[in-house]
Picture 1 (tube, rainbow, N blue to C red):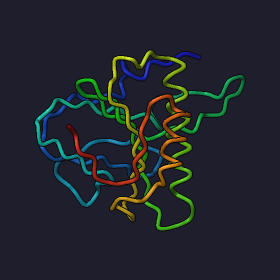
Picture 2: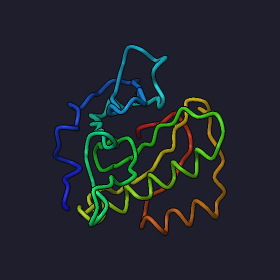
Picture 3: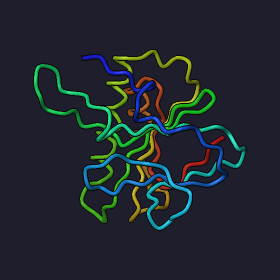
Picture 4: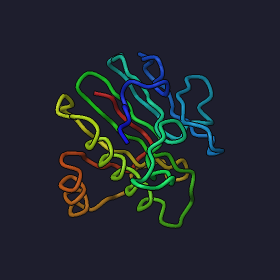
Length: 167
């Protein structure tokens, strides 16, 4: 099953706000961006250079089925695209309980699916963000795991923090 992650009804109009958030009501609806209600933000986007950024909801919007089944793939919440950059974002609201490993797994699976359906070579900068509202500050991922993730995903860097700087 081929799916276009980049040209879809799930893609919002691009925005150039200096500051906005990505929200996920976690009720089966798709993630979305917001500039007015920062209490709902799970990820905070700092866009100091006023770049045109597009957010595309993935989970609960783009449907990808596991091969040969009617089961949905486990995929991340969304992606930000701008200039020559592609940032994948997984949003969580969990206190404890292995949220980071689940987020990394969803990000890695999304990357695998993206690579199987698209040529990502136009994107020089590729990152994956695990964002958790209950753990908004940088969460340490050791260098060995970072390197392993980079190798498994063929070029995506991983970060665990709820603040994303657009450069």
